Structures are given as structure tokens and as C-alpha cells.
Amino acid sequence: MENTPPLTLDERLAQLKRPFWIGYPRAQSILQQMEDVFQHPKMHRMPNLAVIGETNNGKTMLLKTFYRRHQPDEANFLAKPTLPILMLQSPPEPDEGRLYADILAKLFSKAGTREPAESMLQRIRLLLSNLDTRMIILDEFQHTLAGTGRRLRRFLNSIKYLGNELQIPIIVAGTPETLNVLQSDPQVANRFEPRFLPKWSLDEDYLRLLATIEPKLGLANASQLHVPKIATRLYDESEGTIGELMKLLHKLSEKAIRTGSERISEDMVSHEQIQAIGWHAPSVRNRYVR
Image 1: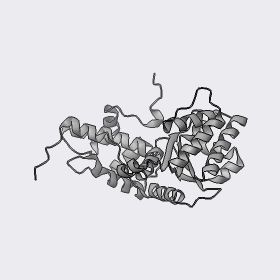
Image 2: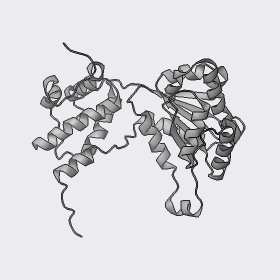
Image 3: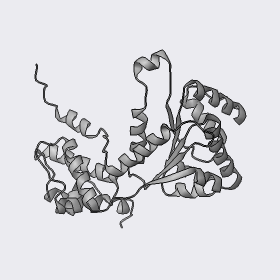
Image 4: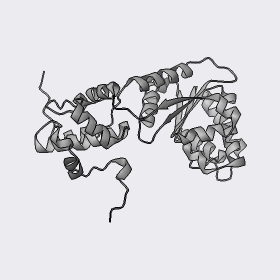
């Protein structure tokens, strides 16, 4: 068997930027709950979930991981096109017509410029039924806070109607403001069971997370990210969110690769060294300094 040639510097840096899934326990628990909902027998009032978490704390990666797990393989798709899960972003404001148009665009069936909402809804029902769609996922659901009163109620009712008519579960995901949206209508709030992705604490779970991430960074030498001094500095600078942690580790890994050290050392995570690679903690990133 031929030896695989080593990656070039550019190839290693490009590989470093590719996102990868970290199956930590809380995320795995939510994935299992999503799977339970996905497998639920059809009934008039299907179970729904609301995945709630801070910005940059892994919600979208979790949703995409679940979505990919349920994509049909090519042979089955060619035999009969299916779309087990329809996943899209919530519209930037609570507008049922915009929601229906976005769904149709995802299904390659563009809405007419003046097509009534009822017409779009009937086409969606037909298309999703023919595609054997079994779940709808709406990410960035906090966007719907841009509207209030009647428009918001109509938007929430349209989501409830879709789930009832198609007898499929709906999962919404967003920042904690999503709870305010759902709770604006007691009937809707009662249908969506919240599941939370809180910020990390500097505890054993966080240290295990670092130990899981380290081999995926592709560095030749051990960094021992879980060592208390390094772990604490990484936690302080990322402020407890996994997205910020990954961005910081990518920057540090790039420096380790370029300098040839091939490890993230205690010196590298000092405040001065982290600032030198252009990193600022999220809470001070946009602060204007005179």
C-alpha cells in the first residue's frame, strides 16, 4: 500500500478550519430527544421541541448533525426522492407568507410574486407529503421577536397549523429570547418542550470537552489542554461558549503549526500572547477604546 503524502502547510490550515462535531453528553441527550420526537407515531398533536442556547454555543451544529444523520442515501433518493427533514432559518420577521415562500424555495418550487398564503400552504402540504417529510426544523427562531401582536400570533398559528395538518413534529431553535416568542401564546408554549444548551462551567465536563477536542486539532505534539492553567485561560477567553472556544483553539493551533511548535503551550495562552494573535474575548470585542 502506498504511503499517503504529508499535507502541505496550506492543506493543514484549511483542514483546521473545517467544522467537526463534538458529541458531548448534553448535546447527545438533546439529539436523542430529537430522535424520539422524529420517530414518534403520527397523531393530531405531535410533540415539539425548542432548543434554547446562547449565541455561538453549538445549536446550529447540533441541528445540522441531526439533519445529516437522516439524509437518504443516493440510491434510495434516486429510486424515490424523499426529504425526511426540512430545515431552514426562521424569516427575519414573523410573516407567514415569507415563511411559506422560504419553504417553497427550499423545495425548489418558488412562490409567485402575488401568490396568496393559502395557495402556498396547499402546495407545501402536497410537496411535503409526497417527499415523506417527517420533521420541520426552524433555526434562529428569536428573529420572530421583530414582530408583535397580531402578526406574531398569525405566524405562530401558521406553524401550529403546519404541524397539525402534516402530523409531523416541529423543532425550533434560538437564543433565550425564543422562550419569549413561544410564551406570547399559551397554546403554542404548551406544545414546545424546551431543551437547554447553557454556557459551560469550569468543571470536569469542560475538562473532558478539552480532552476530546485536542486530538482533532491535528497537532503533532500533545498540548494537554485540560491542564488547569491552560483550561482556565481558555475558559476565561471564550467566556463559556463552545463556538468561541473553537475559534480561539483554531487561532492557537494555526500559530502552533506556523511556528513549528506543534502544541498549544501555557505560554501561548497568556493574555499578551492571545492578544498578539488578534483575539479578544466576546464581551470586550466590540468595545471602543480611546
